[in-house]
Image 1 (cartoon, rainbow, N blue to C red):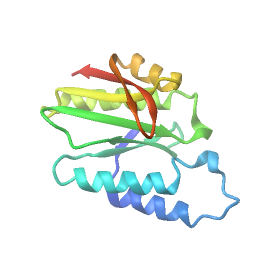
Image 2: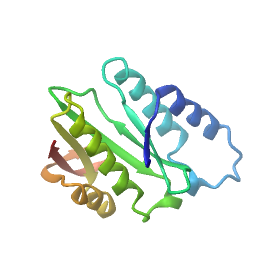
Image 3: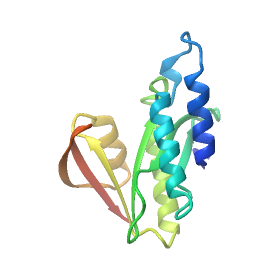
Image 4: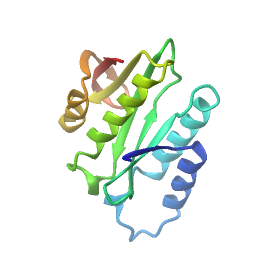
Length: 157
């Protein structure tokens, strides 16, 4: 299994562990900076009471946790927006593509979900390919104050 549901408390524990890690740790193996993990834990905690799972761990073939896929806002009218990230050390191995494929399979089996959406930087070709390989199509663009120019993606499940 490449994904497994992640609870907000587990994500928060990882954020706290990474925040207290020694400066000599391998940052390329970190899923995300501790402040981003803390934000994702808060997000999952706000979504979990209404919709679960709200996040999933991603694993490599050896069973090591190497990434996280999260619902990025409260689902509404069957639309679930996802975001995902992999530790840099594990980029280019197809893990994100396989993990998103499992999310798509989950969505197709969950009657609450009608459509998956996602956003990628217009410069993040690797993330765009993950979505393309899983049947998502570009449905627009937008500019985000923090993230810049984004492509908006959707897949009807």
